[in-house]
Picture 1 (tube, rainbow, N blue to C red):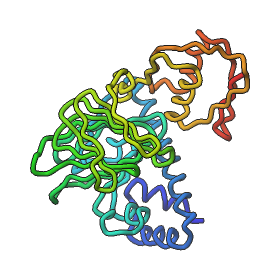
Picture 2 (picture 1 turned 180 degrees about the vertical axis):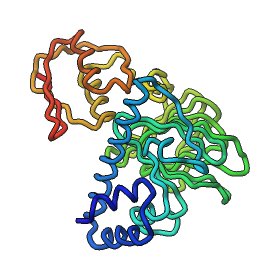
Picture 3 (picture 1 turned 90 degrees about the horizontal axis):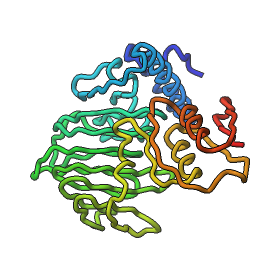
Amino acid sequence: MIDKTVLYKFFEGSASREEEMLIQAWLDDDTRNIEILHHERFLYDSILLNRVEEKTLLRPQKRQLLPWAITAAATLALLIVCGFYVNSILHHNQLSAQYNTIIVPPGQRINLVLADSTNLWLNANTTFRYPSGFSGKERVVYLDGEGYFDVSKDTKKPFIVKTSAGDIKVTGTAFNVKSHIQSGIFETSLFEGSVEIYKENQKLATLNPLQKSILSDGELNVTQITDPNEYLWKEGLISFTNKNLGEILHALENYFSVEIHINTSSLPKYSYTGKFRQSDGVDYALRVLQKSIHFTYNRDNNDNIIYIQ
């Protein structure tokens, strides 16, 4: 096992060239070491995030991160600058070395401004790759998770969001994308302009404002957006409209990366509408639900499981 002090120096950007080479050799020695690196990075980020939250005294602040002028403090340790790290993790290919990678931890969100002035929000549990500058004929970024994009218009250089399930192509517009490689979710919701949905270079659909596409069983279905509140996550809110308790708990699971086990059959089957502040955390959300629904819960912090009774 490599000395964690060396890893933490690398995370904060103070590792020497010799220490970087030591980490490189350690990663090449065993592919399982990549998982260890991710785990240690998450712990490092969590520590910094807790320190920042204590200093801000729970006062929410919006920050924009400029890819050409970023510091570790401004990113709250969520930005993993490319170079050595990306080159090691992302299949060691030349293209990856030109990209930056952001990993947003559970319960967090982040605002980013790209080199072309495109403004975007990234939701919790999202991995986003983007270049420091767009020099080719297309502006290509990669998303696994959820992002809200307000794309700077450039008709000569399309903006393309690549995901594991399909691609979204635009020239300038505002839209939301949710695409998780593990769950197979692929949803695109359009608010301004138009977007084109592609799968393996085949055009599947063109969306108009206030339309939403969902990929299900290999087919892309286009419907109208009926609940704009579900996109309030970029404002720091978890919103639900006419959802049953199971759906609400599932949303909390996804956002805060916890498992919620229901060990009772007596929970009511009613639908509920409401909002939670993301910054209040999963325990606060459950306590609010308890005011309307009679249940108790306990939390196993070692296994990160919440048991509803």
